[in-house]
Amino acid sequence: NGLMSFVNMKNCITFYQTAEEMQADLLKKHCSELISSHWDQFSSEDFAHMPAPLLYRMFKTKTEYPLHTAIRTEREDVVFLYLIEFDSQLSVKVNEVDNKGDLALDLSLKSQQRGIAQTLVANKADVNRKDNSGKCLLYKAIQRGDEFAAEFLINSDCDVNIATHLDKETPLHMVSRFDPKVTDAQVIQGMAHIARLLLDHKADVNTQDSTGSTPLHNAIISKNEAVFEVLLSSKKINMEIKNSDGHTALWLALQHQEEGPGDEVSPDYEETSLAARLIQAKASPDAIEPESGNSLLHLAAQHRYQAAGIFLTKHGASVGHPNFKGETPLHVACEEGLADLVHELLMHGANPNYQTVGTPVSALNIAALGFGDSEPEVSQQTPLHLALTKGHHSVVQVFLDYKVQLAKSGSTNKRILPNFNVKDSQGQTVLGLALWNHMHDIADRLLKCGANINEKNTAGMTLLHQAIETQDTNSALF
Image (cartoon, rainbow, N blue to C red; front, top):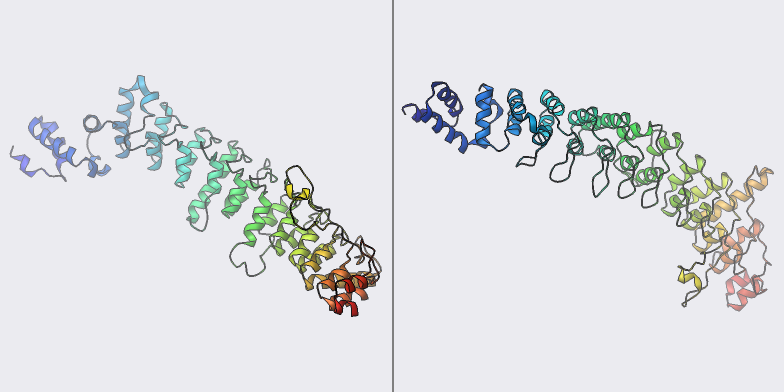
């Protein structure tokens, strides 16, 4: 009784041990009550010197989960006592989730207690066990950027292709999503090591999540170059897989390069860029969208990614592929006014005289069936028709200079000479379009480069007839 007045939170564990040795039951009970009231305030150091049998008995009286408590206090000897007692129930006991939602194996891995983790696995701990939220141990390890835990689980033959229920994310998807901008460099390198380890243990590098994205898609979106390099080194990687938006990894690399910091200047497509490394790894520059027939070059032009378009052109993309409307990349570049890309396409053999076919008529395309009051669609347009319709003077000048240069050289070298007398579905030449859009200076240059002033439209009317009929005095005088 005299000693009880000296007992406090700081020394109650020591007094509890002393009372046990002295068989002082009253003092032991008093200390036990004090320990219970402050249970969550004790750390592993407070129990470091207590004998394992006594500590194990205490844990069994103080908590419903003595195994988890033994791991939290880093007492491997107490863990052994637990395993001995529940030898016949190990497959259940070592895989229990405690009242804090933790698994024993996960606790040992988080605190890097390799010995306890190995003991648990050797005694039927399930390396693929999920907690109450449905998260498996490997998922949790990667989520917290825990290289130690992830490596241990992979080397213990956990399922490296296990996917989350809703998002269908595999461990490879997860490691590829770490963003270097907001993640410590050591964690990034650690997760790259885990990516390599996953591949070595036969993780599927081409698996797709619920959005259709592969780990490679994720690595590009997060700009995780460390994991990107690991994935790209896999001999089994398929770089042509499209996500649910219909985009390949190369398109995402181009898109993120264009929309990255400093997009007011021309994006850098050096050999170290993600796009260049994909091309070096034999990614196709000609991926096609199944719904529209658009190639990557079409998409680059549509998004006004001029540098991306030039990059693709220089790396062997097909400059003549038409989409379902008969538009080549040159048509789209002309319509968007991308003069530099237009020049590059022409220099790589794009056909300046290729004509569109218009929107394909289908049972689902009501607009194309002619209902409503909309104007009939103009088809059979060359790229230059579109440039003039949109008023892109710089693009027209590229065509004029290109024709002069080609004519002077005397050798087309597989390049095609522009024909300024090709007519669209309404019988209009580019000269006519220049006149009706009041670009008389351009009309004059077109004439000097071979445009025929006497061409007739579908109604058999010359340009002069048309100008008079529409009372366009300036064009008639021209």
